[in-house]
Picture 1 (cartoon, rainbow, N blue to C red):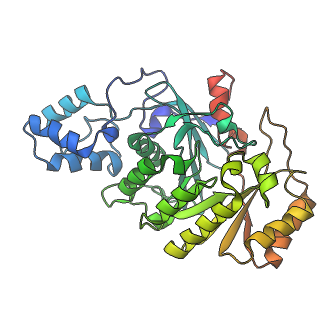
Picture 2 (picture 1 turned 90 degrees about the horizontal axis):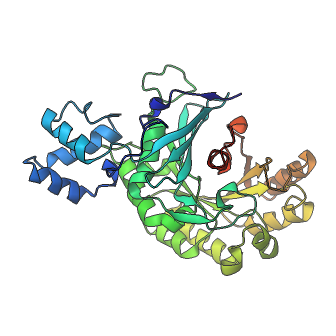
Length: 374
């Protein structure tokens, strides 16, 4: 069962609202906003006040920013939009997973997910409109990549999802604010690394969303040069490599871009990431029945990772309309788990969240774009 919540809970405009023709305030460079304020006789400190109201203060209108002069609030509303995106679809699963389809100012759509359990509130955000990596099992890349998301669009996703948390909750299973971020939505995060690092830096600020780097996981299919650049950022972000196969031949069938890089280069970059940051690398492995879940695959995967500081997330495949893959047999999945553990490798089977609301990446967006009911 799924339910549609009141769309304004997120703070972003509801679906029926026209798309804002004005720039989103979070996409305005700080220097530009400071100059705009100076032209109106406002002190530089107003920049911090405005951004703090959006990021930390949960303001959903400029008028609600009561620490600003009324005339300034009016001028801000005339020149900027608080949100450049609107909520096109908002579904909630029985496990309180929220899935949003967000329509951007250029009429493109992306997805964002809020996962709530065990006292955590985790935002899963997109980094691109579509995806160019072509992973054969992923609905996000079926139509390729259109563009990178801006820094403001990345931040807005976090703000919209944060606004769905309850700051006054007394439920020990729920967090009053965002506690974690996983950059595992639509797109290849490292293909948009500059904007992503800018957004995460703002999100981690004490005047932002206060999400520390150790609570952020960035996923990638494996772009070696960008993995090294991430390691050199000096931040303690976690890295998750979408591996999905234990050898180059099979991985290239599943992740076509592997043909250009190869697993050796990706694993070498991941090793360097660990050496430079001290952060254990997670390897994501979508388990596709009959394709990458056989005993030989389990043994190869164990051999590949046994001497590495690695954690493996096994993700049993769940059906996606239009794709031919199937869920693995329980016995095959268990053999994979046992083989990895016997090799001394940390392994976890990822719990599926929001199953009945198409929470797997790209599914709901495709339904909305094609006019299908959710």
